[in-house]
Image (tube, rainbow, N blue to C red; front, side, top):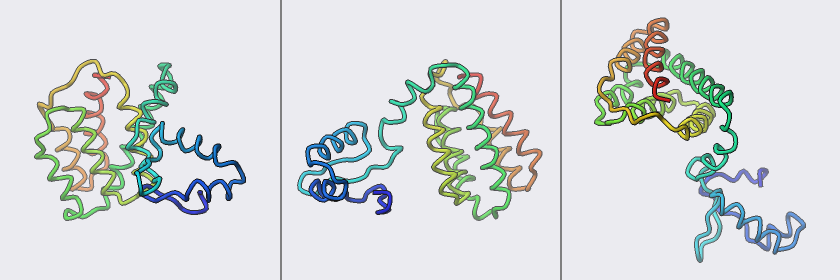
Length: 193
């Protein structure tokens, strides 16, 4: 299938074709497809066929996270990776023009009420602005794993000054100030994990 270049939304070949191509019985193909559907990697639409789903749209991350993130060291490692990705995402934005940064600027007037959700939205917009699809996919997966942590409490969004300062530093191409503001914003997030 990898050689076919299938991606989210693409239709899978029929059971008969898969059986012939993989040199296995149709019942084996049927069972494999059921397992893939069970974990949310594919979906069957009556009368249309079987289609590949987006990896991050299913519950697979939550399912795997329950096993992978059982010990504190793994959780800390994941948070460290997430922060490294976010720092590098911000660094890549230093090369963008004000016009290119406009969607991030508009997000600063968001009506989001949760700090944790705002942080996620801010960095989702930031990574989209890098126009690096691989970085986007890696960040998204790491963020989804981090989102499975149980937070101490829901944190109301009272002040986004740190994020405004991050944006201002990006606009001014000030790497040092941007990193300082990111550290300030991250401290608040980490306090609630």
